[in-house]
Length: 95
Image (tube, rainbow, N blue to C red; front, side, top):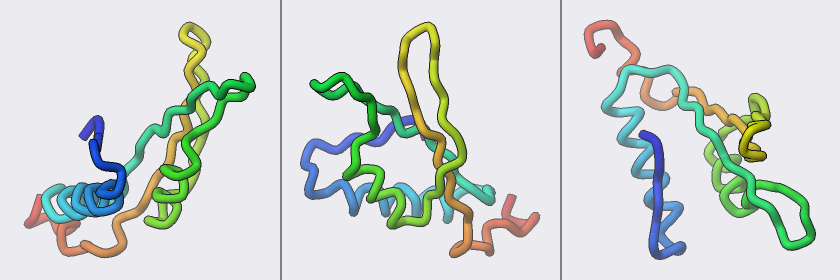
């Protein structure tokens, strides 16, 4: 999965939960990593959306590293969450 978008921001928690549930129940992976891209604020600072960051933290995503693209000036945080709820999918017979 490369991108999740929602039109109605009130649904973002539900949509994100559904995406995570689908990944855990239909794939053979022990962790999910994602890039949370930062954006430039009017005052010139660059940071990630605090609302999205909190959404990820509440779902046990943890910071791994920051990537700075020198060519584009883009910055992203790499966050990861481990598969702790759907261990059944990790059996070789399910792969």
